[in-house]
Length: 97
Image (cartoon, rainbow, N blue to C red; front, side):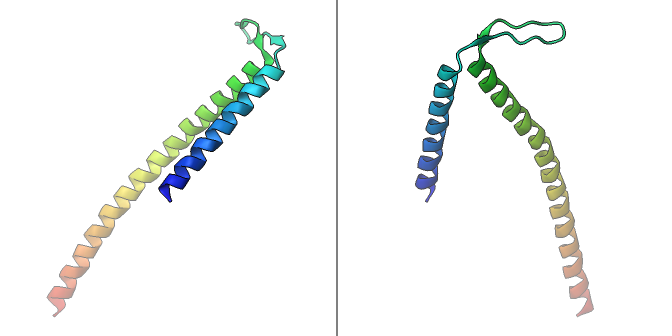
């Protein structure tokens, strides 16, 4: 099953790469992007669009990693609390007998 997942992932990655290359080649008009104080060199429109998509995806992964980190810390804290409460309950049950 793990092999099928790896093959599927690799095929999807190759498909996305091919789509990106075709997209870049079909949108080859030179475009300069003008920020407030910076003007970029003239690159193809397809390249600028792919760059913006990948940059957006990277920022999305970075933003979600902060949330994931917080959730993992909370999970560890709750696991420790659960362990402490389980030990407390076991001690209480032994004393009750």
